[in-house]
Every structure is written in structure tokens, then in C-alpha cells.
Image 1 (cartoon, rainbow over the protein chains, first blue to last red):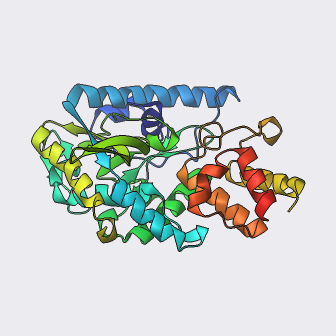
Image 2 (image 1 turned 90 degrees about the vertical axis):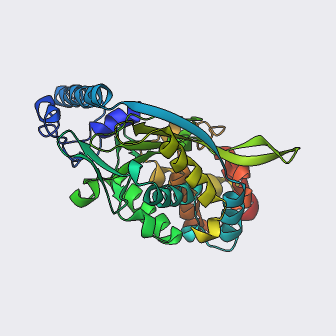
Image 3 (image 1 turned 60 degrees about the vertical axis):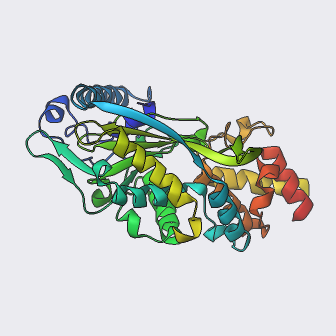
Length: 269
Length: 80
């Protein structure tokens, strides 16, 4: 659980995110305010932040009380992906260049299609409902404070260039407070990419009623032993928080290793 | 481009990408990622904004040279 996740979960309309609403059927992710107001500006803003904090506390408590989380971590080898991205970017004007996040998100979405136990919703009455579509929730930090996690719809079907365009558009609109309600609705799995701002790894708390959260750390060059030789490769720590009622370490591990496999052939993403 | 023009272009671009940053307070040794908290998409937009304003297209292989405010100003002053 990170502050960002809390703020993301707190992003709902205050009335919809009130604790009373949170304890009954899991609400879909709600339309967030454009940004969390800076604390201390006005009494009203302070109260709003406090109210959101209580709501999030209730939601995350419910997640931790009811979802038996398990956690896995693996190191993704990004040598092929970064080399491919650099060769592509070298031919492109800056406006159409890719960032590593776009490749990671595409691989995460494709792998979710291959391992359906991490993609969908759980409720006490109906149990697990896998989702046929992959709507990838992407945690977007807002510079003024707070975070939202709108969905890249059908992310598994988007070409990397299209996903990159949509990601830029989504982030820019999220920061401008111009998200559409449909984009806030029903991500089927969420990715938190705190590594972009410097942490090595992040273990998220699952956002109910989803059943998994992928955490991506910082892309770093690290020593890499391969075939008895030591080299240096770009790599990233990927973590999975997943729901034990739906999957176990074997399938969760398969999800992470599938992401790694997909990243070894970046041109096919 | 002289250094003053480069500085103005960099400040204008930072102001656009990260409007919350107080430019008067920014130390030129500040790192764009860690100190100004630009993520990879912000950084891309910064480079794009500078390209549009100055015509200097900074290729990806030169990104390490422009990781700080000062590095970016010097890069533009030498190329623009």
C-alpha cells in the first residue's frame, strides 16, 4: 500500500466514497475530483481530504480484512525491450517516441489475458468473475497531489504505438481533470508504476473488487549473470499482489513470468 | 542560441509541463526526475515542448546529458 494507492482509492466523490457506501457491495472506481486539493488551503479542503482519508481507510481495511493477499516478486530482463525501444526511438521525432512504461503495460495486459485468474472481479455471493476484456487501470500521479487510476480499455488489443498515444492522452487528461466517467469505471486489474519516480519496488494493496495489482519499480541497469558471464542489463522489479481466493502462487508466478517472456520479443508486442 | 535564450526556453518548457514548480526557486543543479519529480511521460513532453519552441530535437541517446536543468540549458546553448 502506498500513499498513491490510498489517494487513488480516495479519488471517489466524497459522498460515494463515504465509509457506509464502502462496506456494502464493492463500488466501482468512482469519478475522482480533478486533483486532491492541497491540504491547508481552506477549512473545506482540509475536511474533504480528511473525509477522503477516512473513506480510503475503510476501503483499504476492507481489502486487507477480506482479501487474503499473497505477494510475489520477480526481476524482468529488459535488455531486448530497451534495445528495441531505443532503435525505434532513434528513427522517430520526439512526439512519437515510446517510453518503457508503454512496453511494460502492453506486456502486462497480454499476460493478463493468458492468466485469467488475475483479471476480473471477486464478490462474496458470486465468487470470481473473470473478465473477457483486459481494462488496465493505470495509476497516474497528479502533480498537485493525489492519484487516479483510469483504465486503458482493451489494452491487450492495442498496438504499442496506439497504447503509447492513449497513455499520453490519458495521463494528460487525468492531470487536467478531464477524465470521462467510463475511463474511471471497472479496471479489471491495476498497475502502479511508482518506479517512474524512483522506488525500486512497490507492493500494492488490491483495489476491491479486483483480484490483483501489478507493481513496477524503477528501470535500472544491474549486473546480470548469464551463461557463466557477468554483464549489465536494464531490468525492473515487478511485483504481484493477488487474491488467494482466486489464484495461488503457481498461477500468480505464471503471470509474472509470462510478462517477462513477452518482453523478450518486444517487436511482437 | 545563447545561454540566456536557452535558459528562457527551458524555463518556459518546465512551466508548461510542471506548472506547480516555482521557477524562481529552482536550482540549476536540480535533477528533472528526482528533484522536479517529472516522470517519463512528463520528460518526453518537456523534450517535445523544447523541440517545438527551439527546433532542437534531443535524441534519446543524449537524455543522460540533459538530466539536470543546467545540463539541458547547456545542451540547448551548444546546439540551438
